[in-house]
Image 1 (cartoon, rainbow, N blue to C red):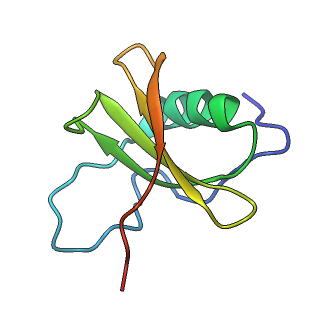
Image 2: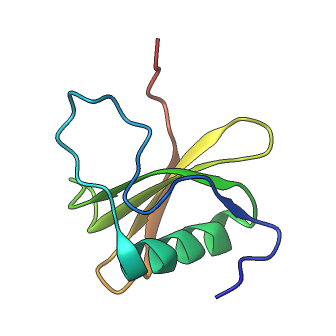
Length: 92
């Protein structure tokens, strides 16, 4: 699968979340599918975090857009779009 014009910054299973959090990152083939679905929705950006079993949907993919804004894309278990919202969490 080729994701033209979009980037995936995270390695398989890697996540940029705090080490104390117990969220499970998406891995393997599911990571590729979830990333592609999220980037199709945002039309640009880089995947910077993922989660399986998010409280809002089956998969959550965090995408950082070119302007630095972050969007959390919610997907169902078949990688279909459910919802998207600006990520309002602050790191510091």
